[in-house]
Image 1 (cartoon, rainbow, N blue to C red):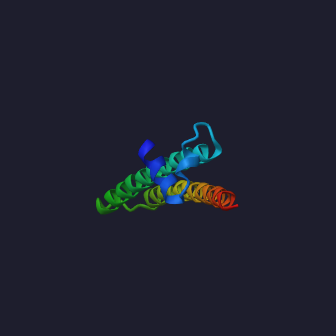
Image 2: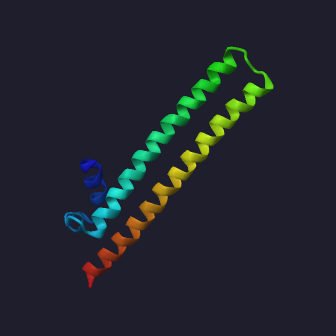
Image 3: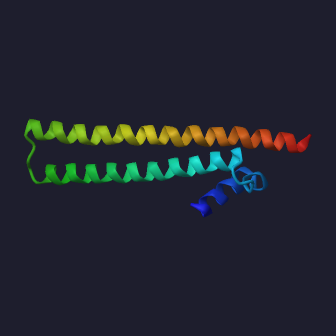
Length: 108
């Protein structure tokens, strides 16, 4: 986690501000990393659900009830991944706004 935090601070050009423990920049960065990890976990679950659906389909069990259950499972997982992706996007945007403000304050 520490490495990813440092990568993000460097990416946004706010390494010095991120070094302040308990500061807003560090807190936002940590929350972004947590959101990225959640996205990775949810994406892995979606991949697994999709693989299970493909396995059942290739086994030839394509009754309407089975197809509906498989589609529902994959669709639900996809919705969770979409929500996790939005959370990452929102947190990256928040960190970008803060970084922009920090850089503007440095310049003045």
